[in-house]
Amino acid sequence: MRERRCIGCGKTVGKACLVRIVRRPDGMAAFDPTGRAPGRGAYVCSQACLAEAVKKNKLARALKVTLGSDEMERIAVDVASALAVREGKGVV
Ligand SMILES: [Zn+2]
Image (cartoon, rainbow, N blue to C red; front, side):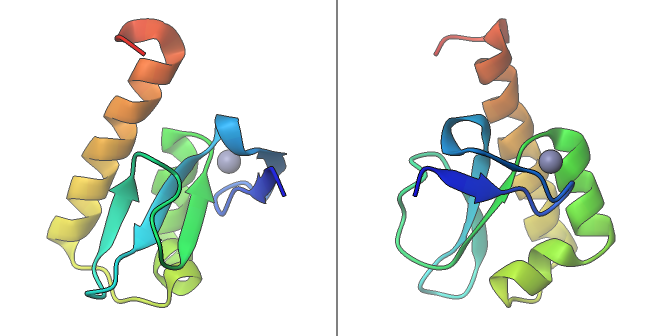
């Protein structure tokens, strides 16, 4: 089970190409840098897909949570930096 579906574009891609967002036990959604945090997870493959997923409420639906705007902003920032690292702009 190394492949996951991106909730933004709907493509199934290797887990290594995706960024995971997890619903933590406390019910808050957060970026999951390990990709293995316990809880319901959702995956996106790019910042554009995250934006799309947030805009269309797909992220909240995938995680079955209500996302506050602060929470969404935090996730967007974390995902952006994770993707920047992956694209070689930072240290892996
Ligand atoms: Zn995508």
